Length: 185
Image (cartoon, rainbow, N blue to C red; front, side, top):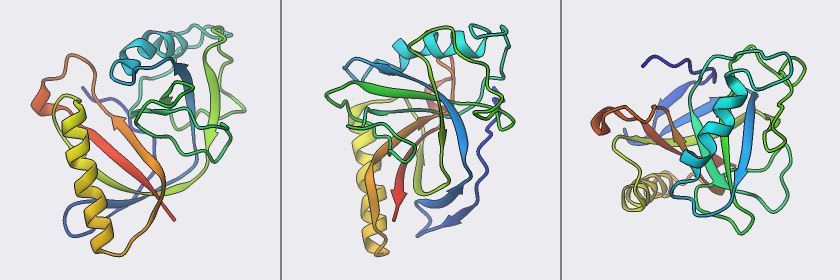
């Protein structure tokens, strides 16, 4: 129940709905899954879990952390590429955030060629948090609320939304933590 959350952040309420967070750079293990987006996280989980549970050079086990993010594959994946929620033509990018003490210099190399390691640069995001199982309707409603609050505050964002999930599959629906992130200009 108490997964570590390695991302450093601060929050400032904005109309009591979204938060503005500043994230330090962090490292992810990621895999690209073919569409559809609805079950990409479930299909990616065993691949990424294999990596953190020891399917890597040195058979090093890493702590399970949160969040797990999901987004379409950007046209060109580089260090500053935003991640998004809906399916892209090239697939869905699913990421596990690695523990805070893991970086590109000391992360064990994956044995599965589908798993890539990448450092995500520092960024500022607007966030809305909600509970429940993932559904397109629930996601769309909360995304619209976040975008409306940002427009009302005259705050602009770039890229597409990022879906972040914090709980395991056995967590009851009303205890689940989901977030949508929008990268700020």
